[in-house]
Length: 184
Image 1 (tube, one colour):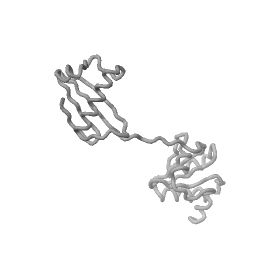
Image 2 (cartoon, one colour):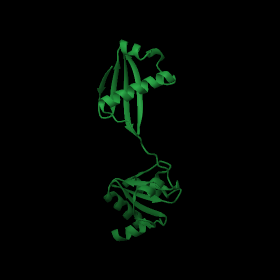
Image 3 (tube, helix red, strand yellow):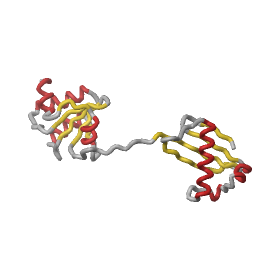
Image 4 (cartoon, helix red, strand yellow):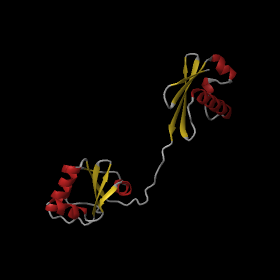
């Protein structure tokens, strides 16, 4: 049995014919559904990880086996577990993303000058992007044209809720009027 570390999170275990006989493994019947094979493969993985110094605690481990001539190769990949977060409020709304501050301010200025009532609007900043969130189900075509000129609509169903929970709040209510009056 030879063990090669392919990177920080990958390990290649090579088993020749004698190793396959010693561990009583048959590549054609190798499956994690069989408890005996499962114990042997997990034991091999742990032994190889200890030899190579690969830590698998608290990580998602993916095991792939493939034949290579008379040898059996087992590829072990250990990736950190990703946490899944649920939204506290999955409320709806329309969300527009602007790539930079100048596009954001230009869009707000044009909307403010057009005197369209946007009382249910809020402004956010996250990772260098600026967001306008509207608590309406639809917007007038003129507003959509202006917003599309300076940014893009976030079409994901929960985009507005994600922005509200994770972004830095710039203006809570009536963002177009509050920010726009400083631009004119």
